[in-house]
Image (cartoon, rainbow, N blue to C red; front, side, top):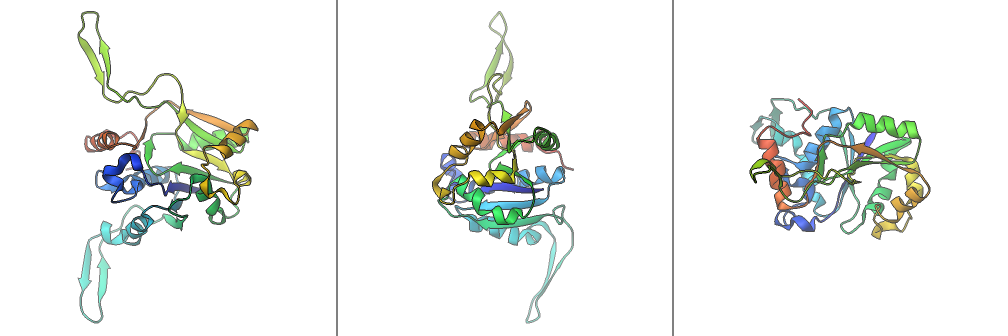
Length: 262
């Protein structure tokens, strides 16, 4: 099953970083968040990726074009018969990555429609955004999707809190502090979709300026074809500088819930 990742947005709320690079290339630790998302999917055995590129997409192309160079020790022989010898392997050698240029200003519905040829004859595919991580049980979400037989499954998550949460005792003493709590009530679209190829029927050929999350998903929901896979664990988008800092702290401290690979 192929994994489609939307990587083309301009990420204007994170302009400190995205003025210079696409948001999926903003780092957590020493790797871009896109790498973290792909490693997460690969840990479940999903290793065929289709990246929908747009804003500064050449930087993502360069990253994968030079992946072996950046992850290996290399011996170079200079001269007219130049040669390079790579001394080590990396854990991503069995990945396939399709880099699809879907346009700088294209909206999400248009990007998804453009990659239809790369899905082939697969009856379903996975879909997510290039700017959020979590510890979703992807295998369970796929099983849930296949069991209900509808056209689209969205992972429904609790939105992370914007402010630090205080647990206060009766004497006014702070008993606990949670920097980024998740809301206990209400759910939002967390991405990590499982989609039947039938969703392409909801995408107008002139849908470049249409958000998939608007008319297409609203129509799918109205027809009773949209199901929610509830996720109560960790989920965190990277929309702001403070969220980027949070994810980097979790990674640096060895407490990144999305790191399920070895």
